[in-house]
Length: 430
Image (cartoon, rainbow, N blue to C red):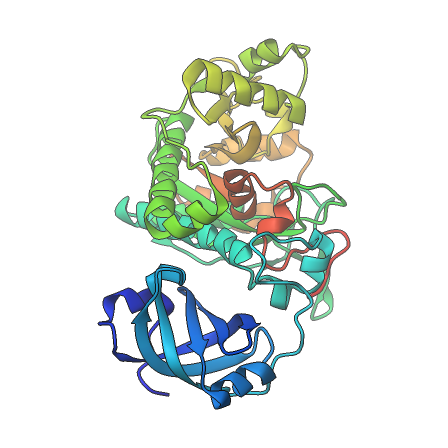
């Protein structure tokens, strides 16, 4: 292949230059004396104009989504994408012509229903709007990693096949591990805590698995979790401050690295306030008119709180702290002045739970007492507790579900719209 030029690079090339493009046939149009071909590559679209009989014949035999290499001369045309087009083309397909795609990728909007797009994901994900959604995810991942790198964190990778459930056995996928039971990890929680004793500040990007029979627009059986844990904190408020730093980094990266995707999808990228507004769980219940003994917030409560945060603080984000200890995992640190409440929090993004985090226990005696209270065996957690027996600083962390983040950012009605190959109660392919 001759030196390839991307569609987005054509503006840097002098008019009249010989150029070589390569990509997919996005759209064809055959007129009586001229043929138009719109080529798509990873950077965008380029228009090819053919008048010679051999070039027009080649276009006629190659359906949409066929892979082609095009060599021709760059010309100016205000009506073409970017004001440029390639003329006098020589078109060479490096493989067989494409079959007719099961979805119409050239239409600006995706007219097919979500089930059809998911069934034919290998082709449907090529649509510019689908690609743009994941470009937002990729930019978010870059911002997540970059912001934590700058704060002295170490990226880690923990096992996804584990010998025990992280929180409970009710929502885990069990599998046979060489003749003994094992599980797909619900969370890297226990491992990332142990690694605080090694690296002090750690983060991980990886899949987690929840065998919950939810068939909703916001739940998946496998999703990508962005996990953070770090030591030498004073309280969960330090964790909230770190969450704000990470959030700002993710959104900055979205603006810088995915500007085209933001424009295509019409995304309203939120501003992050200098300090995220924080409200105690008790006050949250009062604001939404819920009973004071409610153990958790309902989705309707979260939506109402999102409206309140926007109207009162001008913020798309709201931190609800102090959830009841009875509804939090055993490793959660209680509120020092009132142990009924926890030093934990949820972050709501436009009225939907985005992240859960908080301060963890760090004293070995507190762990053994908490396990006894919850009816769990300390022996079962012996490898985990060893980290605390050998010295663990006060620490805490949080986790963000990537797909839920992108769904809320784009306003997607269903989290599956922003997931490359979703796994849920019904879907195991492709």
